[in-house]
Length: 294
Length: 339
Image (cartoon, rainbow over all chains, first blue to last red; front, side, top):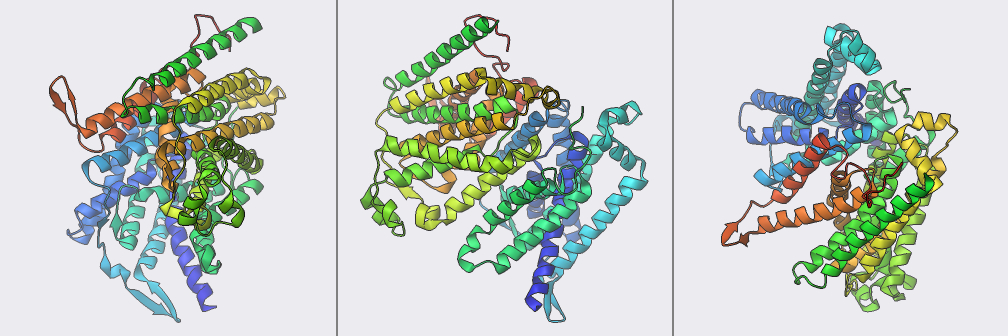
């Protein structure tokens, strides 16, 4: 029973990380119908920010890790995505793939493929005991920062002018523009927020793994894709739900699977995801943006 | 009209087949450093045509097609590696597989068929998914195949990989399969399945409202495309002589995507010309990376300039010519084509 609760805590922690990442994908998708491959590389860019400033005061490092992905997200939007904004879904998808490939190759060109060790926030690594369970402070930080982000985002989307514009744009972009919603501003806002979410993911990931390398975003990106897909592409609550489901699947497969199959965990996770999609092809919570517009 | 369309497509086929034949024949004339470049370029040409057959006709992007290339490669490799090599590298192989050694061409064909059968099984759940969801799920398939090939050590020798794969002595096989793939892709896009699929690519709602249910057509394209992917994979490893899970994974995926996009996503000519162009550019960039002397001037670029160059080319193509360098039209002898 103890082990079960420990796994539950682990899956909530992992799920929080996945949920934030899924949210950053879903937010941009909802407005632009763009599934952004470069989101994973924004994690990497933020993580490199932490590697360069790891000896600075922690608050300074944190700000760098949060700001760098936002800046990159805005630059990418301006240079790569704005020219193809009106293109087909698959062109957008492939453009983001090209951006991701470019960012990764640039890091390989100027830095190197060798992982760098970063000891970020060592204080968070220590665990504390509650009722016989071992909980690292990092898990608490992960779950609580996710909660803050979720509450903050839903406040932003429902109470601020830009937030309402963003929801309108996600509902029906053309009509929203006709009603006076500024396309550039709304899209930039979506990219900035997704950059912030990615920054948080980057900080938590580096604090957990202590490593920074060019391909570090790839796995998180795949996970975020899968989370948004099972949640229902474009649905924000779906992305969060998908993130937590995926976190739970991953942890529980790892815990209860026979040891000799342990290396196949990821393959089974994806198989389960495909099985979910067979029953719910539109995802668990399907959204307006993912429906075909006539 | 039908007649013009048929004549135009035959002329496209002849032109593309000629182009590929010239490249294949030039293999005999170039030096030993360029020979592998041409041979591997041809293997990727076949893979790009196969990718086009599904993506270009259906409009659904797939990031998972390299998985079928990998499957074809592994199936054929296990069937064609000699018994002694297997004893050395794969002691855990079941008796039947450990003792079997087929002719490389038979093994290649079986590799293609195996990839096609797996595609058929996978298409049952995947066909239900809408465009973007299907694209993302195709990535999951690439991941699953990678995890399985990297960890099923009894069969694949895991990360250490397989060695002792018999080598091809010329590019004849690659040339024949490339011509066959061009013919198959041309035949498919002229067939009623291909036309229905292309209609749904342009406007799925309109196509459905006309009573076209394209699930079956999508499945046919998917399976044919996986078959040629498998064959391409099996031939590709007969150029390398060795196979590890990373041989056919993310970087190969990126490569065929760039080839198709730069050429033009929705035309066969685009797939062929794109892959030739990108193979050439990629080789030039590798040469610059390694350092090269042109009329007495040393040119040496930093390591890592090849992927950066390819990424920039891909991005600029998408922004400036979203339809690729062929503008997604087929090349013909000046015959107007309606579709």
